Length: 319
Image (cartoon, rainbow, N blue to C red; front, side, top):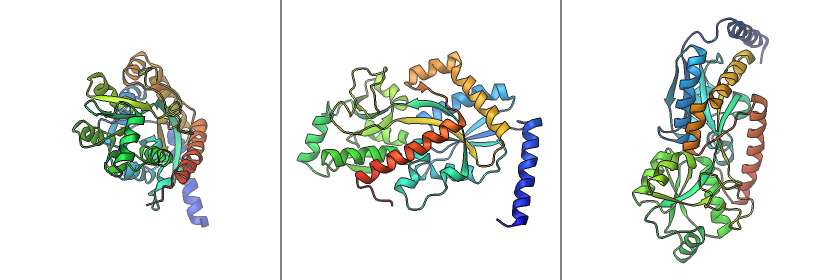
């Protein structure tokens, strides 16, 4: 960076910091969701946005911009002015996974963004249509071995793809990934009988599970979920290292002043603790978890290393 650009950047930073100290927020805030409406990230974002808008004294509007495993929405926010008025909901699939599975990534997670806070942990499930003949992972694997390349899964998020390819590798089967723009579309295809199996977040699957239109074969995370205590984890079923845990968080463009980050973190933490949000999380099967900006950044670095190793062992090549 030359001297002129450095001075310009410093001047901009000083101006934004001064604004942060005096009048933030003074206009509506946009919270980008890089997935389709109806996903667990979308439902959570809308609930939190409504709560923090009251405390911030400005509207917080949610905008869905799906595509490229969340890359389109993430890139849009990365290029936004770092003034606290454009934020993005981050998931494991839209933040740490792209650089693991894609050759051309639209952003650099660790240089283009500043972590604000996590909002929730979201258990992940392996689901089937209620009318599916498979009642266990063992039955699914046996059928896949008997008829190779005839069964499929919904590839609607990067983390889901890594999880399913890890299953393929460990079980020595070949479930075919069918790409979708978002989890809601994949769930629709599962219900229509056009997908064999579908990885999904508990929060998004809960309505269909309760309506008995969908069943869960296994939890993809490290422990059983209280919402479905009878459903085993993949670890319990003998799949080594099978720990795929989802989370939802909020990020801002890199360079956003610390006072703004601190204010947003404070309001998000308060929103998550509120009784009505806690009640919603219980209904959706979400686990309320608020990490500090520093801890959130550390979590993303840890997950990047972890899932990068899993993808390598599963033989996933960058596309």
